[in-house]
Amino acid sequence: FGRMKKQEKVRPEIRASTAIVGAGPAGLLAAIAHGAGALLLERNPDAGRKLLVSGAGQCNFSNNLSREDFLRACGRAANFLKPAIYQFGNEDFISLLAEAGCPTLIREDGKAFPASLRAADLRDALVRQVLARGARLQTGVYIVDVRRDGDFILTARDGGIIRCSRLILAGGGCSWPQTGSDGSVYDLARALGHSIVEPRPALASIEVEDYAHFRDCAGISLRDVNAVFHSARGRHAARGDLLWTHTGLSGPLILDNSHHLDRGDSISLCLLPGAEEKLPRILRQHPRHTLLNALKFASLPESLIRALLQHQGIESGQVCAQLSRPTRKRLVALLTSLRLKVSRIESLKTCMSTAGGVPLAEVRAKSMETALCPGLFLAGELLDYSLPSGGFNIQAAASTGYLAGRQKIY
Image (spheres, rainbow, N blue to C red):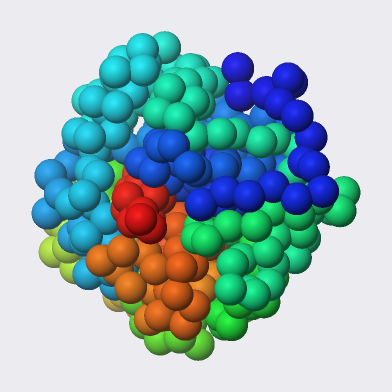
């Protein structure tokens, strides 16, 4: 549906009251909010390519948190996003989709998906709303330059010119560039006077040095793990679900905090909270068990216990009653602060989101209009915020896009 085959190609010059660059969630919602007079420009042959691959093709587009709880989870971006979320929150998004024939499924964990679990159904519903509300969608238009001469003058790769009184940049970040989100919109923002915080991966898995002992742990998931992320930016504590992979770590705990990390940084994991009391009790209660068998009573998977002991060079066949005091101390340290060093962070080519972009201080939160260029509005992943997994990023893109689209020029 998102492919607009019959749309005419860009003529030497097209005029629009408002042009929107990028037909992802931010651009689509901006066009829906604006309606007639909006011209939505997409470089791909169809709209919403990144939406189609989100959530493994199922598209976790939001969640059922209250506005207050949603913003609380947004961390340092909460104050900036507040006007947008209150203008167009999750309930508004769900209602809009229902109106367009795309009902929502809320899972037990609170995540929101199209009921069909098909991202294409959500994308198609948004495109229908764009057209129903009188906006125009022009696909196959790759904007390569912008300048200000009273109006905004956009130049397409094929030489076409678009002139508009008001411009919304919603071209995304630079993760998953194969979907069209290749960072080229940063150049358009720079051309209009904005600075760019260096983009880096967000919602990314990590690889770990000296990981051989943990490869057999791939697929193990642990709930509510406490971690401390150590980097040149400082020390950051977090808690969440952890997934062991064949080469390192993933799961919400890692994905949501990966933007804090660089190669060479480290993570400390607490795998057994209260190990100072729990471990001695386990060893006393099972004095004739081997260490490997006794530690199963700590509710840790056997393959992970074996890997942890091998990683620290502790013999798993030792009888608990014969453990030395230094070995017991090493075990407590191992279970409360396992230190792993980052060898690689998933690249921008495959990670789910981008940290970095236009600084929030350069944009007015109440309208998404920039403080440096009147008539220019920015929305979505182009902005320098990094949000957790679980529907936050698509909802924030939709909300900031909708808020920008509401600011019409009369």
